[in-house]
Image (cartoon, rainbow, N blue to C red; front, side, top):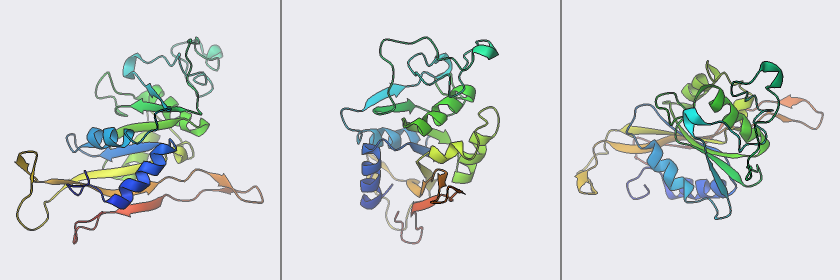
Length: 228
């Protein structure tokens, strides 16, 4: 990814540090085939060996391994009066102190992807300290927010404040000059992280007043120089 110019060493180093701290990471791109899963898989290599990875099983997920699922709004078909109770416990429950939730994609496109109430639970779990590593179809931060705040996920803007880092990946026109061979083929088009955003959670100042700060821009792509 560095060799092909998808991102630079500075951003890669920053993502390394954030992944080591289990900061949630969302890789977004509009169309399929741009490289969301490839980039996310590369970032997962930065997780320390003692971090537990909790794969979320898409449409078949029951969150029996997630002790806080009930308080996060998961009912899994139970009566409304019992919705706040935790699901049946497993012998190896997840712990927010050492677990990253792995979600291949936040969408309803395939049974293996996570959507609706299940997507709502995994994003809410980040507020408890769980890490999150996932992808989503969106071409901008605004599209990410619009997708996750609309039904059927219906998260609030404050709940999205724990998303951590959102990377926007795009296939862009190849830079001027002769095409560069990569893996036996020519790079046309090329893939770039065009923006990296830090989503800042709701905080309180010294007087206890709620502070909602907008996302911080960590990096952007400069088309004229083709650098991130």
